[in-house]
Image (cartoon, rainbow, N blue to C red; front, side, top):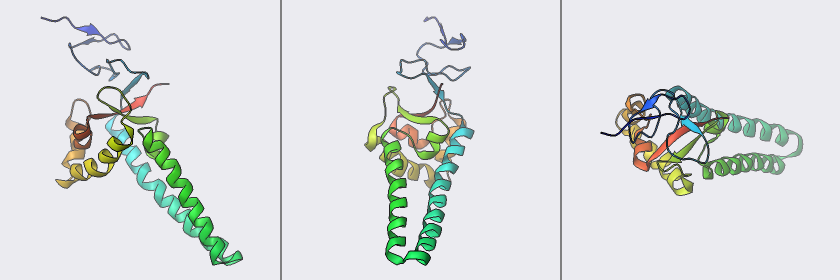
Length: 169
């Protein structure tokens, strides 16, 4: 019978082969950055921020373009709207490549692979667009799964072998 080993963060005994501390949720496998599993509430907050930020940008674009158009004409108003939209898309893509979204970035979270590595663009794309679609198909059960699963993984996380973690300071 294997002996349990203590968590390096809180010293609580752990089951052999565990990936996450059952007490403090800190990672037990070797990662370049210390992190712990993100709570379902924090993940929900990131989701709402991810929904809200594009709506705010859309409002800013429409309001700003309308104001600029009123003063200097349609061409410059359209250019301002295009530049604001382009800036948001560039920032969002840069975050996406790093394994995060604007909401996760604001709340200091990111997505990692089950090996602890960054997911990369393709895994993030499949997780966010395909995996989340699948998670929402059956009355959102794939999202509710985050509350049930011991590793707080939704179906989109399970499909892509990813975890959402909070970065420790």
